[in-house]
Image (cartoon, rainbow, N blue to C red; front, side, top):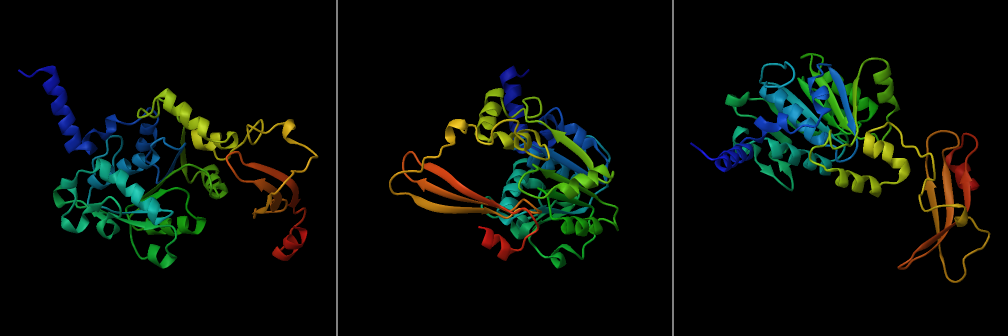
Length: 320
C-alpha cells in the first residue's frame, strides 16, 4: 500500500523519464483542434509564448513514432524535415524537441544533443524499436538544391517561409502523399500569400489567443505582463495571432497633441535619418530626426519624406 505522496513522486519520476508519453495532457484547450486536423496542409498561428514550437515538436514526434493521440498517422519509419528561418532559431526548436523526446528513444551516439548546437549533424533518428523514423533540420536560407532531391512523409515549418520555398517543400511530399504544417506568429514577414492559400481552401487555418485556457503554463498575471510589453499596434499579432497589427488609438501610447510643437531643441543635438523601404506606392518613408542621448533621451521628428508615385532608388534619394 503506497501513500499519496509516494504516488505523486512516482508519477513525477515517470514524467521526467518519458515526457512524450504525458505530453497530450499538457496541452491547452485549443491545441487538440490543430493536432486532430488530418489536412495535408495546416497552419497553427498564435501569439508569442503560446507554445507553438512545443506544439510543433509534439506533432512531429507523434508522427515519427506512429502513436498520435488524436488522429491516424502513417506507420513508421517515416522521414521528415524541419525548416526554420535561421540556424539560431533551429537550435531553439531543437531544444523544445529535446525537452519532450526521451534520450533513450534516440538512435545511438551519432545523434547526441548539445544545448548550444542542437543534435549532431542536424538530424534526429529514433531507434528501431520506437519506429526508426528520421528528421533533418534545415533553414529557409539554404538554396533550393539543398531543399530538393528528397521524398518526405512530413514537413514542419517554424515561422512563415518564402513562397518559393513553400512550393518546393510541397513537391517533396508528392511521392509519399505527405503532410506539411506551419507554426507561426504572423509578424515580420510577408503573409499575404498564406492568406490566399487559406481562402482558396488549400491550407487549413487554426488561430488561438494567448489565454490561460490555451496556455496552462502561463497565469493571468504573466499574460498581462507580456501584453504590457508590446506596443498597441503589435498586440493583435503578438497576443492573438492575427494577420495584421492595428491600433484604434495612437501608435505610441506616450504620444499626444502635447508632443506636437513648433519649438526647436536648444543646445547640442545629434542628427539621424531613418528610412523604411516599403513595398508599393506610398510605402517608402524617411524621417529626419534630432535627438539627445542621456538618462532621459529625447527625439524630435522635424521632417519626413514619402513617395507619392512609383519611384526608383535615385528618385527616393533625391526626394530625401
